[in-house]
Length: 372
Image 1 (cartoon, rainbow, N blue to C red):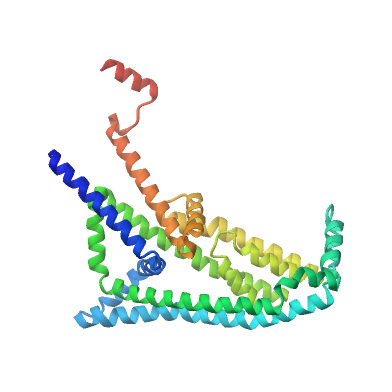
Image 2: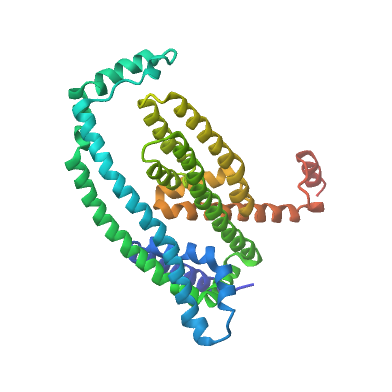
């Protein structure tokens, strides 16, 4: 049993450690997203990288060549699709500017299908006729997103792209050192976890890793696949700029319930063009794909990997996204995995302490206490 000076020393050490960590977070707050992205990428690719690194026993290979090749590969896997998507969207943005100019000049006629919608169809048709069908009204409504404003928005995008590029370079630099010193770092993290949480730290770290892998599989990969599958529907139904819509769908589908924003917009375009059969077909097909991915595939991949209820995963994703941005998609589920692991471990610990490793019902507990 520690003496009072020992306990005071431990408390002082803990307080000093927490203060130093908080100060480090304040100093590095602008660079934390890059560090977190590098950590997520390292955890996601570590099993494959470790096999690749151990293919040769040469020290120079394991210290320099292997992490450099792995970092370069990750950079290309991320940068090439992003660059292609950016070029496609930029090319289609020119068509969008021309379309806005045409709408401002000529207006958009009311789709015939809107007037046939029961209950509120006639109201929507009158509203459309008043705000979009007349050239002057359409110009007033869309005047704020004309060509000049879109070009100005493109300029702000340029500044944002430069900032993201600098963050990406820092992420890759951090990833290189995580690959190089990952074994040592993981050992020290395990030691720190043992000191903080005892033997249960192994489960906590395992569920963090599982949550990151499950989130990547269930959000990123499934979201991109959802964009491809729904994109086929865009192409079959003849949606204008189908490739751009498919790319946008794949990006927003990473966020739970984000895909409807894209495919409902594509459906609206078909309705505006009076292609009602194609619009209804696309709507039914897209919702079918959404139902399968969001209610069957994602819960299995995400919740099953980390043994966390899918509802908590969704809460962690949305909360992480709101507080940390895109990196919160991965940090949120990882935190939920930690919370659930601690909950299970501590509640199981209390059960093990009870007689017969089971919690007594209230009546039996009162009888036991009275007997004592």
